[in-house]
Image 1 (cartoon, helix red, strand yellow):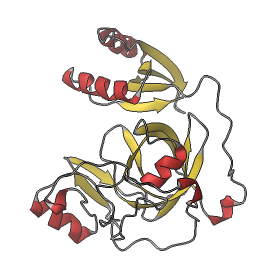
Image 2 (image 1 turned 90 degrees about the vertical axis):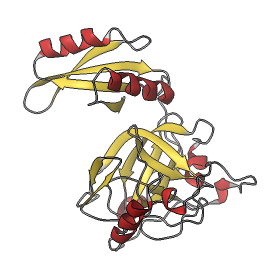
Image 3 (image 1 turned 30 degrees about the vertical axis):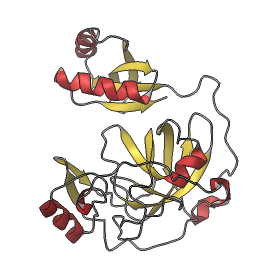
Length: 268
């Protein structure tokens, strides 16, 4: 788990098996890539195998920065699109939430709620590259991020330069590996589109009122997307498409100042 904490918080999280990699050392340092990186192409993906839940890092729930996260009972069927980030030199050699040593050259990742360990396939939606990683850490605790990749995994996916990327994360296991792709997958010519979903309503008039309120935000057109939630038509109010992850982060801050806090990233 990454982020600065006071010592008493560090002791608590160590007790329940969630390491605070940055906060418990007492010294802050910048993160980044190694000065002399190896050829990541030669680093093999993680190979899924059946493992028991880690003794550490799997509390029923935990709180970071005032927000409570609930560990999933199972990783079965998990699939999500969102923004990936990565971590490197700052945490290399420190303990992960499972109490294993973080190796930025290994194919691993951090996730907020998946059971530890879990194996997932991560696909870069912009270029079709795909890797399998072993989730053995907690994070990232940035609201717009769904997974934090090791340096090696991010390099193989082509995410290092921008620091983030639009990805799809799906759990996998040894039985599925034989049928899963190892080569880059076709990418849509237009590429993935990034939106911020600000609200969802059963009443279209409520959606229209929120859309009108959001029209004052520059550079982010508001729109209403219709869908079905199984009970009837749902009207989703979104901002976008957005040009970058940085734009999404900036808009999230603007929305917070307007008192609009229930937002999340949507990738289509």
